[in-house]
Structure formats: structure tokens, C-alpha cells
Length: 363
Image 1 (cartoon, helix red, strand yellow):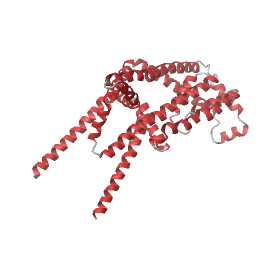
Image 2: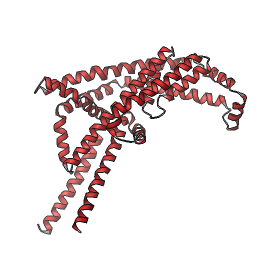
Image 3: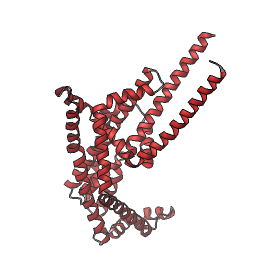
Image 4: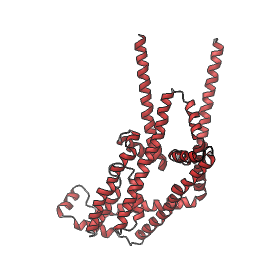
């Protein structure tokens, strides 16, 4: 091949790569409004793939019917309960927010009781560190609680007001899930063929992608449901108002390792102690330590432990970073990016080592 042909090939490749980048960016902008729906469509398809394959074993060759039945199961087991929970949560948050606004829940009296219950030496020590302004602290905490409840109410109301967008995103997710269930294996093979790596390297990336999605959902969402349910039942048994709201908050905070649900039940236990509900506070602390928090230590190793093989601090940082950048979608995206980061660097290190050994052998 002469220099003219070589130069022509370079121009063609340069133009093709430039066009590929431009079109890919344009396509990314085009699908950005449905980014969340696409992410969860992929996640749901991966999670329910075993169900689809089991149905297909009973319905050989009837891929469409197996995919439709799987979608119906997803609607009944996931979508409908989530919508009903959101509606109940909105009512609960609105009720508590209204009671705070009406003065029925008086944080001022609680803080006055707390301040008076402190021994003099502790009040002196707090004053030395500049924490004696209980009125200012009380006001900040009241504002924070009101802001959280107002945010929850506004978010749920915004979903109701944007019902069309919500239903559209839900439709896109379910539609995409159908095709990923039916054609997912063929699509995955086509994507693997495009990746310029050896078959063993592509298999590592594919397995890491699937394992992290399954482990993240099992390790985060299922444990959040378990801890939130346990916490809600304890709050309900102790006749603490807003048990559903506290249950959901504990489920959310359970995503944070180490402290997790303690962000919720510890302040509530302190509130019970201050207001004189001593035995309720003791029961809540015991259940919080030995039931709610221990569920994470017992269940997480069973569901996740051997799947992701990622250190806890990596899971924590990637989850928090994902939540900050992508919202609720970051629960999956954060750990997935972290796992692929570790996997790709592992592949690079292995390839670099193999190359070094070949060079040494040549010398």
C-alpha cells in the first residue's frame, strides 16, 4: 500500500471516529430525558432474567409470551407496591408537617426539657465549647425537620402534577425491559463483538457488569426493605406516630454503611428519653442495636459478600457519589462504575504484565 492509500485510510478513519463521537454525543443528549427509565429498565431486565428463562423453559419458543408474563409479574411485585407506598408516604409526611405547622408537635418544649435535664457540669462544658445556645440549636433543628418534610411532600406532589412524564418514563422502562428480556442475550453478544478485547477480557467485563447490578440491588434495596420494615414494625409496636415515614427514612439511611438506620432511631430514642417515655426508649435502643442494625450484618454477607468483592469503603464512596450525581439512579450507577473501574484496571495490569514478559522473552 503506497503513501497515498495510507493517507486516505487515515483520513477516512479520522472522519469516521469524529462522526462517531458527534453522533454518540447527540444520541446521549437525545435520550437524556429518559436516562433514569433506561437505567432501571436494564436493572429490572437483569434481575428478572432468571424468571424469564424459567418461564421460557415451560413455554419453549414463545419468547413474546414469556416476556409479557414477566412484565406482568414486575408490575404486580414492584411497580404497583412502589406507587402505593409513595402515596401512603405522601399522606404521612403531609400529616406530620401539618402538625408541626399547627404547633401540635412542639419541639420547643422538648428542648426545654432536655436542657433542664442536663447536669450543671455538662451545661458548663457545653458552654465552654460554644454549644450553650439551645434556642438557636432548637431553631435550626426545627427548620431542618420542616425542610425535610416539606421536601418529601413537594417531591411527591411534583410526581402527581407531572403524572404524564411519570407514566411516560414508566412506559419507556417497561417497553425497554420487554425487549431486553426477549433479545437481551443477542444484544449483549453484539456489544461484546464491538469491544476490541479478547474473549476472556470481555467475559470479565460482562460478568462484572451483571454481578454488580445483582449484588447492588440485593445488597442495597433488599436490605433497605428489610431494615425499613423491621424499623417500621418496631415504631408501630411502640405506638410512635408516623411509623411508615420513619420506616422509609430508615430504608434510605440504610444505604449508608456503619451508621445507617441509627440516623433515625437514635434521635427518636433520645426524644423518648427526654419526654419521659423511658421503657419505650429502652425497647427502641435494644431493637435498634440487636434487630434493625444486626439485620445488615447478617443479611448483607449472604446476599452480597462474595459477589462484588469490593471493599466497604469503595461501596460507600461510590454509592454516595452516585446518589449526589445521579439521584436515586446513582444507587446502581455508582457501584457499577467503581466495579468496572477496578475490573478495567485489573485487565490493564494483566495485559501490561503479559507484554512485559513477552519483551523479556524476546530479549
